[in-house]
Image (cartoon, rainbow, N blue to C red; front, side, top):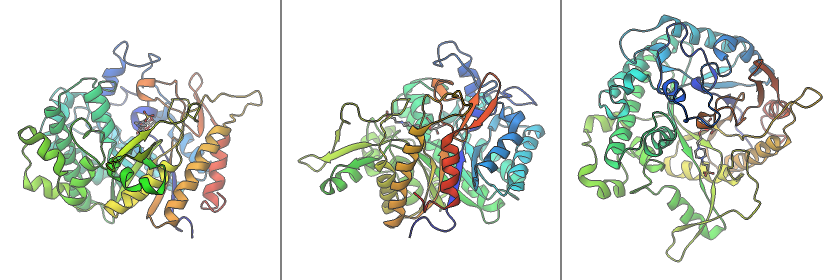
Length: 448
Ligand code: GBH
């Protein structure tokens, strides 16, 4: 036994990170368009105005996906391309772009996975309060309806949200991402609840509109890895803990309402009156069954149990392997993350992102050699395979990312792709890791 026969092998991207064409064909502005144009927000002062110019080069990019042997491609839709003002009138050219992309994918037999929200909120909605405005659930429902009606005849897989932990946490708690502010807990709780309300509405629309739809919700997870057998329960407890100070970045705050129909007790008792009024109707929609959980896992933290059985972090040893962006290489995070999630929620798990940034460059032979990435993917995939063999239901794996792209606050200074992008010329080169990944896909991971 290894990966299941119908295991989904893919790669992932997000609209703002690759599309460019930020103000073409009627597209409205997003919070990321505004944020990147403010001096001092992005490390290398770059923007997503052009990015990988995927908007104009999608045909070449799909051909490259085919060359990599990908079975699936996860991409996100830019909400302001469909609704320039977030609500109101639909921009047909935006619909056309995604229709063309979807048809191109299908012509190569590549299965599309659509993420509805990968962070590029229409700026017009931000001006109405963004996630703090309770009406945003209505706006998101309308947006989802248009997406479902236009693409649902050909697209069956949808992820409502990508990493609420990060777009609320980095965007509205730390302020390092768009819109770039620091709100207090009371406001944050309201925003988070509105994200979940929007999720619930989207699930309802998708079920009603798209036959045989599969719906997921993707979390950013840095799993706690037990140092020994005796530390497993401490790691599990810590991984799903949720309370003052950590609810935004936690797992259970987001997934318990979806899976169990209620927020973790600790969060309700901690915040009491500060918790937004929770409507029963909303809770019903939020907890409507979904089909899979998406996990984006890049790293993890080692823990051992302290004398009270709580997880205590053990820092990595000096010189421990790290990626270019500085994250520890912890392959076991893929084993424990999927196992803990499957044990708790009993839903199929997709790894919707995993990969690493490296200081890739074009060698004299014109190729891009990235042995570190091959080693990273190899180690992580072995752990994923082990988790599947031990009984977690793993539906698929999407490598992050198909190609080098705009890495948010870090601009173009981090390269995560299995395809190298020369931003001066927009030339693409498949890296060694891309060819390696192709070989793994061909054998369904038997050769790992
Ligand atoms: C994802 O975010 C995004 O979905 C994607 O758009 C992005 O390009 C990609 O990953 C790469 O960043 O302090 O060492 O513990 C990932 C966000 C990554 C946030 C890991 C927390 C912990 C690093 N997460 N990170 S560490």
